[in-house]
Amino acid sequence: MAKIGRPRAEVVLTESERTELIRLTKRARVNRGVAFRARIVLGCADASDARVVRRLRTTKTTVAKWRGRFVERRLDGLYDEPRVGAPRTITDEAVEAVIVKTLETTPAGETHWSTRSMATAAGLSHSTIGRIWRTFRLQPHRVESFKLSPDPQLVDKIRDVVGLYTNPPTNAVVFSFDEKSQIQALERAQPVLPMDVGQPERRTHNYIRNGTLDLFAALNVATGEVIARCKAQHRAQDFVAFLREIEARVDPTLDIHVVLDNLSAHKAPPVQRWLVRHPRVQFHFTPTYASWLNLVERFFGLLTEKALTRGSHTSIVQLRAAILAYVDTHNQRDKPFKWVKTAEEILDSMRRFGLRVQQVHGQ
Image 1: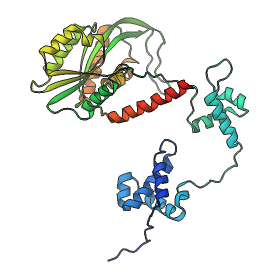
Image 2: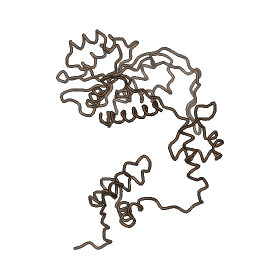
Image 3: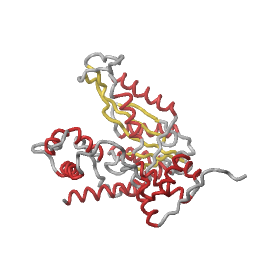
Image 4: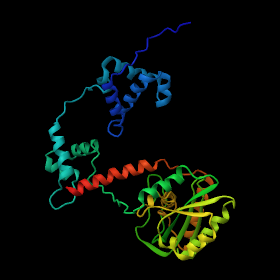
């Protein structure tokens, strides 16, 4: 029996419309709504509504709405219609002037603009400046650091390490290893006041130092399990002792691949002699100044955030106990980290960033 209902509006695209829709899908960081609608229309041109719903994880109503809007008004139908409200009082020229001044100038005697200093210079209110900055994602108050790796083997090392994460070799275990050195046992100068209703936890800004220790950690990339040991130092012989422990925890029939950084202790003669005697253990070094490529750094970040930053430790023994307790809790979760970027995506991103740095430096 034939179905009765409203006929489906067919989507037929011209070459120029398809090109424009594809361009709009790449603007997800600028206008996510329009990019999503463009994906719906592209999907409807090549597949049924049901497939588009499953692919984009949306509803039939949403797909039908934007398919119909496109058929009726073509590309103009993907944009929101003007809403009722007060007329604009800030012209496009004034907004452009604020953006240009923010990007290309600084206030006299200062390093960056604030909303109030820009409001004074532009003759607008500081709330208006704030809205303009938020709209165009301008954040003069923030600064981030970077370091481009000068490693001559940068490309090969990135492909090697990322390949171990995303496509590990058969009959082998991959570990991401690093040391977290000089962890301080910090005791707050006065007792910490616990959180209460309407009141966050409070603690003094000053503290008493009760010594330091080094943490050796090896993250099993496949399982997420962390092998951790606290040491007084991180010398070559301490590293070798930890390697012995890793090897003892792995089935003798499996090879061991270790991702690690370029610390001198990792390349010291005692380590090299140990590697010669244990050929199933292979090292894979990250590029210089590229510790972000070492997956165990993500574990260190969680350890610092959840167990160390807000802790108050009266001794090295107490600090060690807190670290190992967090490691045990982490291992019980049995949830590995997932590396999502391919080597080519990383290299392409670095290339674009390098070109931008070169362009700014050339100016």
